[in-house]
Length: 342
Image 1 (tube, helix red, strand yellow):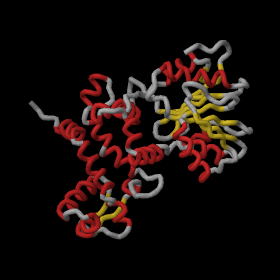
Image 2 (spheres, helix red, strand yellow):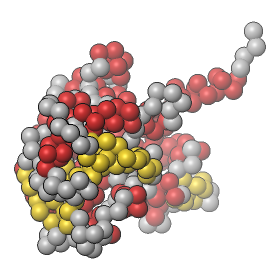
Image 3 (cartoon, one colour):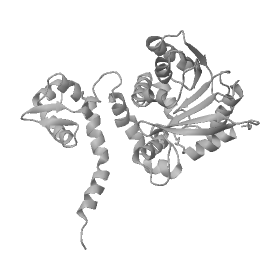
Image 4 (cartoon, rainbow, N blue to C red):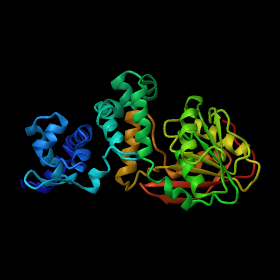
């Protein structure tokens, strides 16, 4: 029997992927990119700065240089790369994402076999409660979760490029969170106005962020449940990555509320999300879909699924536009006729 060493190596790299993730997590935990940026570039210096043993640092850095997180070595000193620079402790970095994924979410993935077999949240299996209930009881972790989510919003700047928000439109961001997307759109489109709809306890976070970034003179903040009602008279209703944890009927209800709330046939509905396909899928959408199962028990949908849900709610998809990080924007127009009940 001839051994296919290339196949074996590929399998080993997949099998040991979790070890690499934990090594990167450790680098973020010990703030190694920040220490190196500050001029601490030797094993001894990094050990002193982190309180770790030098032997452990040397062995960790050997791997992290090999996988491309850092450059250099123990003789010439270590240097940050564009990859490790994303983990610097700075606004918009991926450090909080790395810490969250390397700790709580890594624990959730430890229950992957049972989660996949039962289609049950791996996080709930690990911690005995749903993710959001756990976050409610751990404010520090909830803050990290919010910062990690913001770090994943790299496509926001491209949204005004795929849809025309100009012309004095009122944009209703359904489940808008802290208002990051709305602030990006309003900053790019000076004549637009925005309404942010989210749960009551989220509104103070949105108010603080929007007052700092765009000002509150062009924004209305509404506390409520998008599955029960949405503000009336919007020109554009936006759903950005907020439907993955909800059943199809819930999504239809939210879309139908928007259909009833519009007052002009020129109004549009935008769905911004990762779209999955079963045939010839790329890695990111498939990975994030499975990650949703591990964390919330949710799932990503495909374009056809969203098209069907929108059609049930009185909308028809006009077009799809590609956004960075394998995200898709679906643009839907109101369909004539009655809106289906939930």
